[in-house]
Length: 302
Image (cartoon, rainbow, N blue to C red; front, side, top):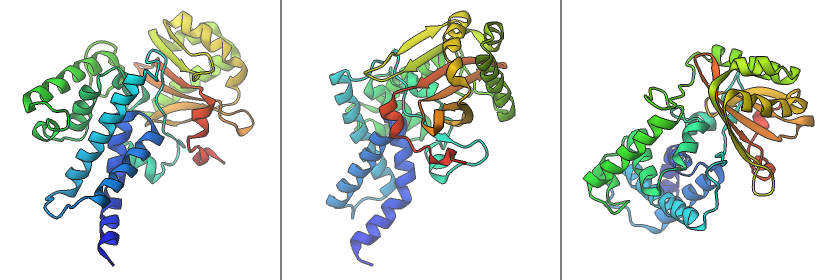
């Protein structure tokens, strides 16, 4: 086995970790894969003889690549953050693919990824690398061209926003939508929501929704996108979904029970659902047909 083969074998050992880092940084599966591939190209071109930890070196490289991608995205103002839903990771309720388990090392619901989109690129990197992957600030600092103290402050600002706005296990304050630990209870809530939508039962929908529920629907650049808040307003939107509700089926969406809508087997929407205290607190719907075509939903085939 030559040196390149050894290097490639070593890189493959870190691929799942690097993909998980990139997905949390970018919220896009395709972009995460691009970042990991670019990391391999840089490794192939680099002299790593003096590198003491290749995993740390590769994590730093992926972090820099993702930071540049985020900065480029911000400068182009590509994504309408008020209605943008990141790429979901979808799997069956009864099984989980190794790739899915690898990228979802921790709970990383769509609601969390949505809030990460609102951070500055430097804040997002500091939060992801430190809070999610335990990288020390003295290693994060050079990536964002800050001192370790300044890098710590970036992560702290990001942490406050995350705790105040999203479904993070153990988060405190603000919306703090905690995903139910009991998957069976999650399934009960999702089933109740789906039944009410199928029956067009406005009262039942309002009852299963948190009074401050938030719906975010991303239809892509050529279709309707919307952000709707409040039980009655969201229930009204759900009634419009009644026609398609019979094509919906429960699935794992970013580690929690959600829904995939696929008339005649063709996906038209993936719905991430955050549950708190037996009610739906947040609905994040990706209905961008172009992006849906890029998702691997073959695991859902019977």
